[in-house]
Length: 637
Image (tube, rainbow, N blue to C red; front, side):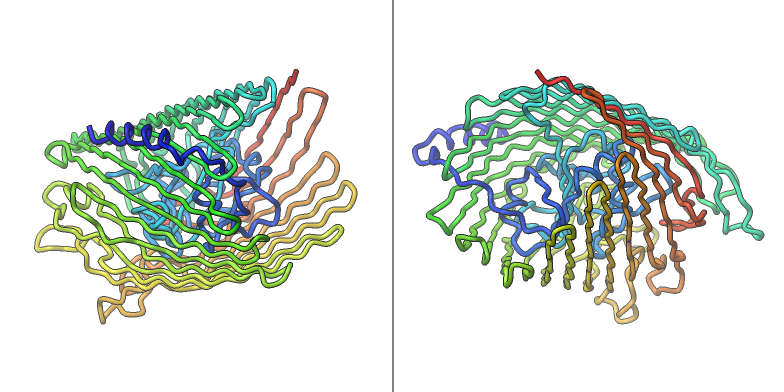
């Protein structure tokens, strides 16, 4: 009933007088991208002032269409991607935060599982994605619980006026890694439809160096195959020049064998099946001075774990209903206001809960932005208050500033209060859950400078950002007599620096692009004197990426390299996983006719044959290969 009442409220609100004013065009996004990239996310574009935002270029998204979101972010973002073996559970860590501290937003809806607070990035196919942006820094006032470290935005947003299109994506790689995908698109000036289908399978039986054996023997990973299948349907329709309705339906099923760690002599027999149904619908009205958005979503997840050795089967289910209304309007030439309300109803069931658990969350959020006519100086103040089952959480807020000092230099700064509510697992899991847990809460600060210069054939940009974050009530699982239970025990201090450099050179048909980034992240537990100044487990102190891309006529060559520093696996920093460097080489050839375009790419992954682990005792593959073919057929009347 609450969900229906909110939907009714949304409908009535936009029909009242005063909501029919026409909004202004979107303001420029606070971004460090070298090339202009459009991301259709109103709150991120206009009210993230002072935060560091890295949009992924469309050309790079196209290069990764046969891979997962995890694989792209691991090589092309400043987020640390935690992988439990190739194709296994994969989660992000932003600025030293935990896996459940980064919001995963699909078309504005948070996909974090209410049971564990995470989303498996290896299960998100790039063929379903049109736009990506990585937002670093706490943004709880904008997106609520779960955005304590940052947010990953990805959208499915088919275009208008493209006519009839068929896009196929195929890959064959080592270990029988096979991907087949097809997109069927049709659009005209007022209607757009996109149907996307994929199937991805792999035996995943790669060789690795087992450092747990005396002679570091080379072994083959066993019981690690996976199968994934998915379908996504997107529809958009312009009712008139100011109104648009949209629908997205996403079904996906994944079957994974779960391999044992290096420490186990015998291969495991565990399996896991994940199934997701995600449905969204929305209506948007845009005028000269205001924009109104009403949208709703239904998210259903099923996770079945089986272990025949101990005759164990666990069936976990989640259901979420989300309704949201957002109203943006401009006052005069210098003021922008955003008001919104969100209701999220969550339900989860598991044998380990002893039944079903429910939670209803209602959030009120608002942002006020003031800016000069040429947007050389802008500032945004945001607030959010969330009511959970009739209990009010503390108000969160943020203040961001951006100043363009010169045409080639901009300064940014952001201060925010953030929070994360406990997950269902932390509250209710068997005899170990703790229903008395308090939300995590804290403050974060950012300050950055961006230098950018455009020449006739050159473009260059440099950014450096310093950040600081202090989080209280950090939830960890600790021993309590004979069991482990989650408690609010840690005060975590994360601080560091991020820098990036981008350079482009274009001369006739030759294009060169170079990019590099470096992260320094110091994250320590300040609540325990014995562990003071000790780095949190699985947070690398140093991390860098660099890449070089050269294109001439129909050919291109690309090399990307990533370094991840050592990660401690014990709180006293006595045990660690070694640092590693991996590089990928890609050779591509494009072809183009009047109605058919495409590209053939040969790739060498882990070209230096590095033996490494991201998470302790879970090996990653040695050197391996793949060939990818993309074909686009377009017929525009």
